[in-house]
Image 1 (tube, rainbow, N blue to C red):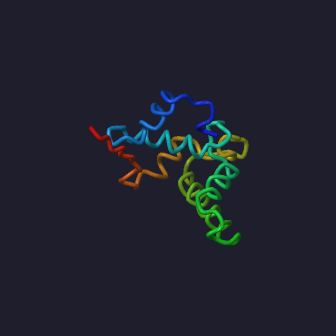
Image 2 (tube, rainbow, N blue to C red; image 1 turned 135 degrees about the vertical axis):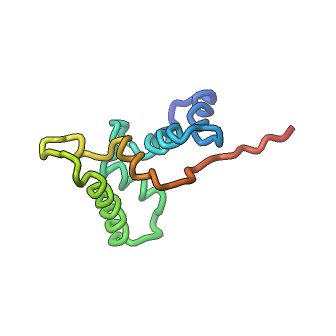
Length: 120
């Protein structure tokens, strides 16, 4: 869905976030956008389920798939632990914000990059 209705210039601008010259935040924003399937600014459980299903396909069983999702949201709960949250906070209960996504990936040193070989 992310690449629908894109002209070439828009496509290049979008994938520039994976260039070795792109900032860490640009790469994180691109990755976040990929996971935010419904474009509501949050990665919901539904968004994550869709993306993980695309990534792993049928290579894992349903039980393992559910454990993987639960582990991801357990890490999110751990991240949120100690921060003030209320039951009424609909944003927190609906999904992962960009700030939380960035925090979850803070320990990842090397984010994906794409090198495009150019022949001269």
